[in-house]
Image (cartoon, rainbow, N blue to C red):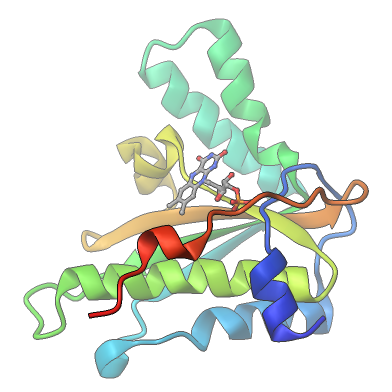
Length: 182
Ligand SMILES: Cc1cc2nc3c(=O)[nH]c(=O)nc-3n(C[C@H](O)[C@H](O)[C@H](O)COP(=O)(O)O)c2cc1C
């Protein structure tokens, strides 16, 4: 797949099965996450990988966070199962350097680029994935359990795996409606 095919046909996909990317393919994905535009070279990202049993651990953390929110039993069970929807999750953490000449918004954007670059590196190697956040990206209990520092935030959980079949194409907007020439 060449780069333009990848970018013009990219979609997110959530029916993700084993095998997960591993070995050189996983290294390529992680490297892509570090090869992103980075004003000031602050490297404002770090990645926590969950696979196998640690997906269950993450589900326990989500369920405990749901319990703290007085969720129903059904909501707690749903939270517990969320990380089991893919064989690999990469939590992408933005590590923000406060009061720096590089604005915090730019550092956050860089961490977001890491998520997208890793998703595209996965797709380029035959895998699929979806970038998710949801309540458990922002819940203080989850942040504490994942040992986030004061200036860290979760910008996404990148769910990755092998698609369960043919990935449907999507109709995309025509760029003309977003473009003007000055
Ligand atoms: C920051 C961010 C957070 C997202 N969080 C979720 C989420 O929690 N759940 C979800 O289904 N999609 C989420 N999405 C959207 C999907 O990643 C995806 O873009 C969307 O399903 C549209 O599919 P497409 O990428 O094929 O256009 C999020 C996207 C971004 C950029």
